[in-house]
Image (tube, rainbow, N blue to C red; front, side, top):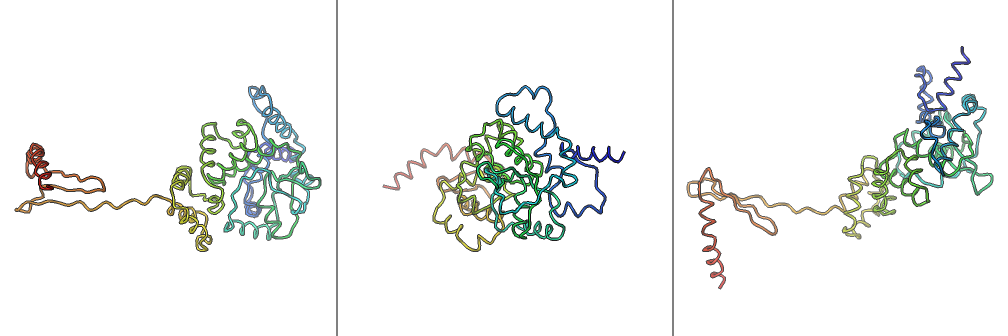
Length: 349
């Protein structure tokens, strides 16, 4: 019975199902990694597709078949559970994915928390890598970049699972892991989609990697194409800003004072802010300045009654009459507009 339950647990981990809640004594392991082990392996090992999906052909079909093949290897899950298939790698030998899915944030407070967690509890969840396709002896990350970065800072080896992934399998695993963790900001997802497209991946692969429909994918790519790379690098991921504000920011920058924008980006005080504060600072710098509307004026008669209201703008003056105070006055003025206009023109001489 114990062996059967152990195998069921391993299969649950492999196929991305949530395991039964752990006893409180094991909570320290989640804190050490900040990522769910189930989501880690679910990203690279998806359950078999329904029969209707198996009829797909071409690159996406081959990719799905390869992922199903990985998922079918239940013994691999047992190996991961026991650590037999987890190796220790020098982080200096591990390169980032060939498609960046993150926007660097030098002021990221969560990295220090992760480093301290790994220092105290060790790296409990392995990263997923593949042998580097063009550099023998090196590896590329499918996911686990921050854990690898923490290992570099601590000058420790990285616990890793090595899989012979194709380019398509790697980006699907990379995208799905991010999707399940739900910690990519909007602009990071947008630029991840754009980079995948620029690399030549078909839309079917990109939608699979990102878990979005074609319409949402087009929206992501459209926004990413309008935000300059240097502005993105200066702001960072800005998780509090969504698509509407990034879209507005891109539109505003087209007519913004570039010298003023450059001054904001180069200000040391700006660079010391958090990423969401940096977004707000840039947004305020490029947003069109709205003119203050003058306060409306009220015209009173000799008895102090508020008969008319005057509202002025840059290109017009609006005059309105209170019909409850002086009924019929508006019609009287309208009937005499020709006389008033003629008298005004005559006064100008």
